[in-house]
Image 1 (cartoon, one colour):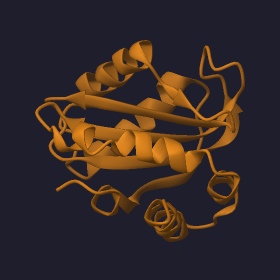
Image 2: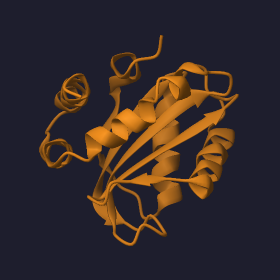
Image 3: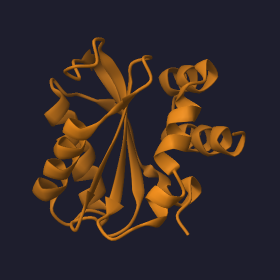
Image 4: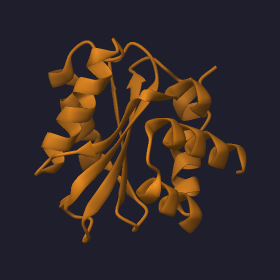
Length: 154
């Protein structure tokens, strides 16, 4: 079964992403997922993320973008988290984004949707404490622990 604990890994967290655009940030996170064998084709995965963005993106209004890519290039569910070194425009959000949480989901995976993991993460991001943690945490391990700890509190 897919759980946030099984998806959130320290080696998929980058707290110093240098990107000038939404696409560049997504590309960096896709490469992280590719390096771990989670995504086999970064081009297809990035396209899936951008299509998903056209359908709907969750923004909690605190500079955090939550998005996903669901396609055949994804081998297993995972979450990549990136904190940007400078804010970027996430197009129609109306405010800059500093943190990106990107879920990678295999095309045939029903657990992720059925269990409502995106909704759970979205609800968690509605908490000022959680969002504050995303900005001030110093290491990927702390970020992973905080995400899992906050999810378990919901």
